[in-house]
Image (cartoon, rainbow, N blue to C red; front, side, top):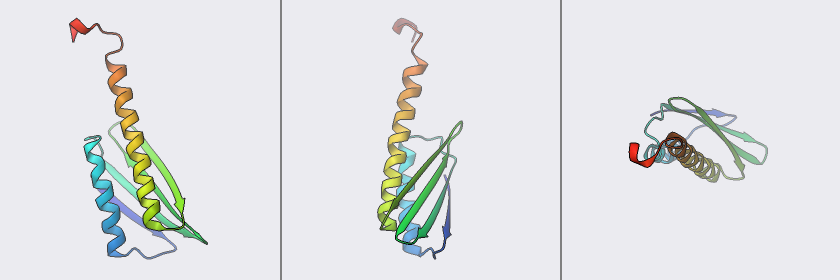
Length: 105
């Protein structure tokens, strides 16, 4: 997976980049078809905003989270992506075998 990190109105520290890459690399266990991830880190007054765009083989998932701490925003955004990936995988699995009988599988 290719990870791109962009910052608006702030500097990206090596620790922050490492934190983002470490948490996003864990998403590969939910879906192996993840092509790339684009992370936008932004500061507005008292809010730290994280926006993650995940490109899979057939779809694109977007998540946005804002808190007072940038590391917490990253953690919550990745947790949202995990739930979206799990729901997507369950949807694909149940839809695939919906019309077939068990004996044919």
